Length: 332
Image (cartoon, rainbow, N blue to C red; front, side, top):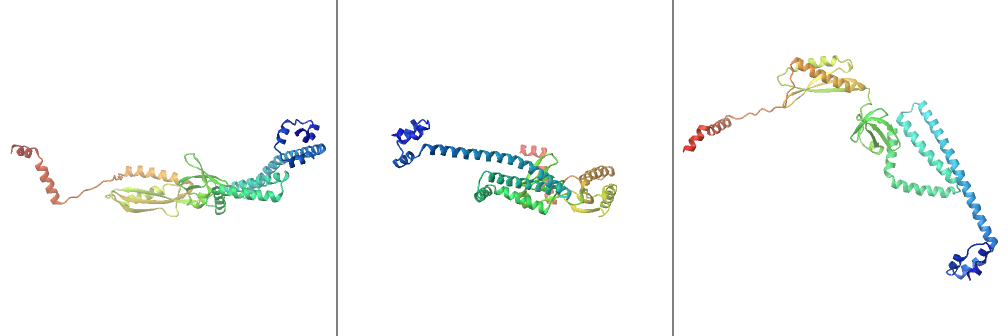
């Protein structure tokens, strides 16, 4: 029966052995429809499929060429956009962020155009992109938060590239700001990536924002030391430092009467770039000059005072434990 039913395939020189086995389980209605297909129809069907495959292959080739040319054009546009930002004096952090945003946006647009050249309908493509967007949004909610944080950092400008900041227990110099994170270089030469979402929702200390900053030294002296003498000496050491700014005036005050020392505090202003070098140099001069002037740095100490009755009891206890009393008690 199979050979009679599939005679069109025999005419096309097709091996019908496996087809006959399939025909045994096919319903009579389906067999009747297949039997009615003429050899010319099979030829037409194969020709049609071959044409579609060839057409789709050409579209794929065109899409690949378009993708390559589109990438080249996108790179040219990104460089042109970056030059415009440089001419308009955009900050480095803003340029990095906008360049990344334009690069990703342009790439997504290029992918949409490539998919359209393959024959997908715009409505179907929009629905597909919407579905993918929802799925990606749910899966990458943290990254979207970082993206929003990057926009906040870009708009509020709490820091710029080159600033020394402290945030989330990380401190260092800002090296760059991208779509999703900010890079910080520490003094130990560590490269740290901080998510923008954390930066936008936590405290940021920017030590480089102001042109000048105040330095502070706290020194402990003994209680019997002359405070006016120490104050005059500290003001002289600060005045001899050329990097110290004269206005506001440096100050020296008695900060605290501590347990083991009198704590003296000196304050002076300098350029932010000179802050640490000035602090360390003044520290060294204070140490050398205090030793030269005989001003001692006190150590923590504790003085214990007792009552007369307590001292008398301790004296009797010591006398009872003397060797003579011990021998007397033994003889008894």
